[in-house]
Image 1 (tube, helix red, strand yellow):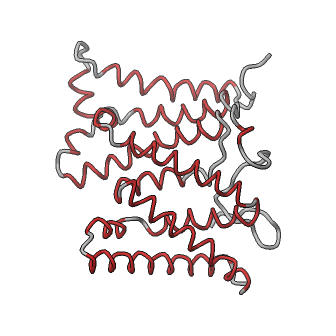
Image 2 (image 1 turned 180 degrees about the vertical axis):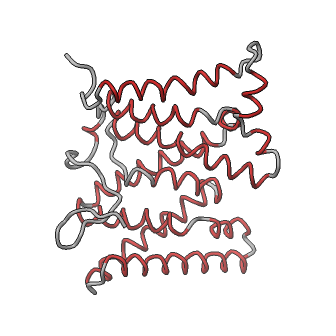
Length: 270
């Protein structure tokens, strides 16, 4: 019996092996007892660049931790079979929680999503095109952020003003996805997928805060390549859907980040 789905040809498997192994060889070459250590640690590392400024360090950590989040999302969706709001939203929420804080971020997120879900039927009844609806939602989210910041400023609650750092587009993406699933699959599925998305985001937020992990990705950026191989490996050999029975409703299709075309029903990339 063949192991995996059988989608990878021998050439694909060879490339996958190189993607997984070559970066690990570079990492091994950084060991202090090897003659290549000094050169590789100096050339293939971001530790010194990160020390230039706090802003640079935060930006590099943002870039370097995203693929780690992608691996966790792929594991949850394919290996465990847990349905979420989409492949990117947990990662985007985790990055947002790092900025605004988990507790404040969760409360604000729930309020914004509830507002978007309540107004979306009205926008649909006006027969606004998809881009017009999303643009209205974008403006509405911006207004909510501004009003919240003003309330925080007037009341003297400085922590509330941190919602200004919550990316507008993340709130729009999560709110729009929740609203679409609520209409298409019902409240049980929408609440389940939203809850799972948030739980993964919170887990990612905690992981991203681990100092040892931050130093690892800064010192060994070559592992970004290995992470790509890990994602392909999971998709080919670990697509087990072990907990798919927990998902409310059917689980026989893949989620799409793109809205269906209103006439053909085919998903189009914006």
